[in-house]
Amino acid sequence: MAHGYGDVRRESLGGDASTRSYERLHREGGPSFIFMDQPPSVETAPCPPDATPAERTTLGYNALARLAAGRVDAFVACAGWLNAQGLSAPKVLAADPSAGLAVLEDLGDDLYARLIETGTDEAPLYDTAIDGLLALHAAPTAKTLDFDGSAWPLLTYDDLALKTAHDIFVEWQPKYRDLAFGAAALADWEALWSPIRAIGEAGATVFCHRDYHAENLIWLPQREGPARVGMLDFQDAVLAHPAWDLSMLLHDARRTVSPEREAACLDRYLTARPDLDRTAFMADYHALGALNIVRILGIFARLVTRDGKPRYADFIPRLWTYLDVCFANPALKDLKAWFDTHVPAEARR
Image 1 (cartoon, helix red, strand yellow):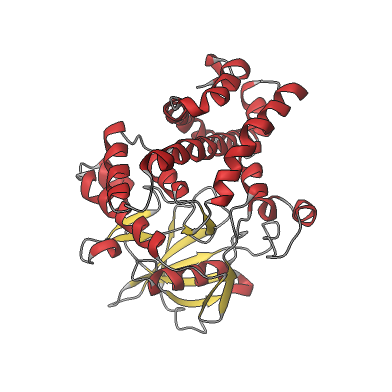
Image 2 (cartoon, rainbow, N blue to C red):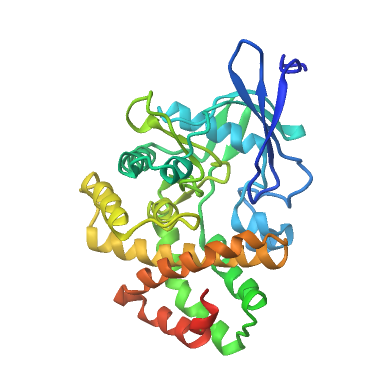
């Protein structure tokens, strides 16, 4: 009411795996808006910039993983930064971060995933998604993102956050597939992932959207260049290795990205980045891609077993297919051997 959005018709929109809810606000004779409601007390605390590993452990999962805990001020700051780079995020029209509320520009319903399902040529969509990442990765970053009174730290996706990511698998996959990992298996697990985490932390140099896939990208063909990809759900952004968002886009859990499309996207990215050594970057992409896929397998197992959301089981076989492609990289042969030993084929479904 205080911001002038009281006299509208409200339309509930579908939610996601988070604790947020959304409505479309219709004003007679004018444009529609999006209302975001993120109850501030539902999530565990986010990570303070100077928190020690022990303090992060005490604070809980969001601090360990360096997630924003759904904070609206994180969304406002990230949206402002993205728009300042000439990219497309919903403009924040009104916000009350303390109450977990915001009114946003409505970018429409043309999600990449829905358009491709109905026959739209995916090539220009994915090309533009890559161009969006190239723009992100070329942009100078700051330790703090600050917009319209909301400041949010851009923290590094560090060793502890990456360890938290892959350890979700060994915590929740046993509950999902009746597996058991003994002390020796877990020690080997840690030893195998430790050098991959080091690659991720050392390469953490770019703004990472962190959830960059076809369900969170909107096609805006009336705009120009990278601004044609509208970005959603970016409030968990961190400073990360550039391979991370490429994995999110090309190892999409919710739709199959063909090997041909993956190759075309990677070639477009690397052609535009002559500063990168292709062989070394592809090794990082497969290693961090494997970590990301394993993370999602753990999260989906948790959603099914703990949260009673069985639809996420439908996505799991696709993730195993992506993981097999990553494991074809000879540098990951020992990690592949761990899975071959401890996760039988019948559990990879």
